[in-house]
Image 1 (cartoon, one colour):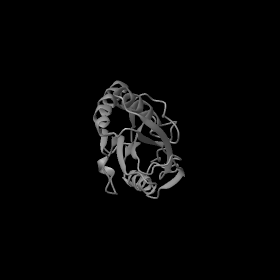
Image 2: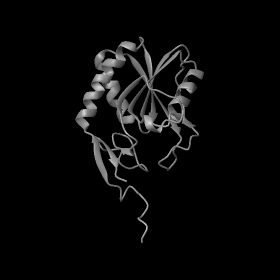
Image 3: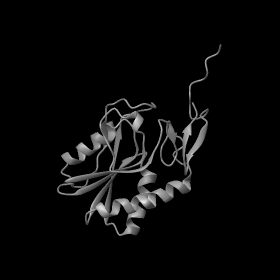
Image 4: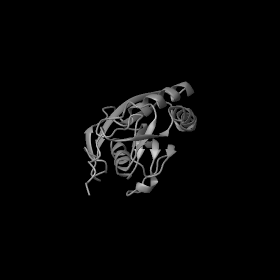
Length: 184
């Protein structure tokens, strides 16, 4: 009996989970849900790299609603090159805007274990944010190991290994307009 080759981006088979049109429609609705909760000048903080497409689409939709915002980026890592969170979060790039007394809208691609989102919220509050609202494109409640819940969720999904719409597997598949899952 031969052992199957290890999963790589080259041999991964991806099936569509969320069509691009469904994602765009949900983002417009999400902007309508978020906008009433925003203060006059919110600081949007996007977690890179995975949330960059979600952020671009959501801030444009919020802008259409009339939101006034500045945009910052953070790079946090708990995955490295693996497919499972290590549980240890590191700040690789921090936002450089003064958050003292400000409202923050924190955007992430996936709420998975809860470690990254929980860490980021605490970190932004330590930087002086008075309120941190959270929005995620995808929520995988089955994977939660840290109590964390997003204020706004695009889609709740099963425990699947997803890619596309900014989400990668070893830096591949970010360019897909949809969200797919990798077949086991």
